[in-house]
Figure 1 (cartoon, rainbow, N blue to C red):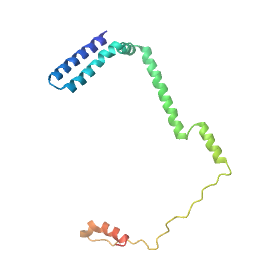
Figure 2 (cartoon, rainbow, N blue to C red):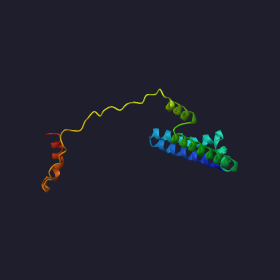
Figure 3 (cartoon, one colour):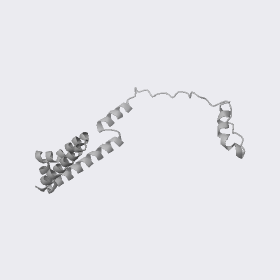
Figure 4 (tube, rainbow, N blue to C red):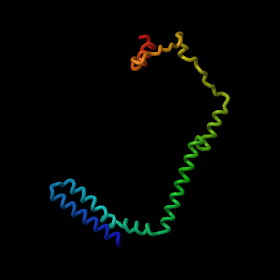
Length: 146
């Protein structure tokens, strides 16, 4: 009963604010405010507020929410463990059968595409204090032969 009264008062106040906003020639904002202010009274008229009030003060309903929460935690825990192990039991058995086949051919490794360079790695000579800013750039340019 109190919740319905509060929702009605909130709706009435919102509609009053919408009228004042429309008086100030801000019609779009006034319509938006009116739409928001009609939501609480709509919830009262559909019975949602009464259902929420009955649910909020019912220990059985709260116990039900607790059971739903526990089931969700258990479900998510099993999903996490399943993902870390590599799938379901059926998927693991299928993977073991595939690994046990003798007709499977292992891929061979190819030779590396780049061999070791013919030039030995050279280190740039230590630069003086004034050349510290450009020493890295000079080393890169020397490395590329520029």
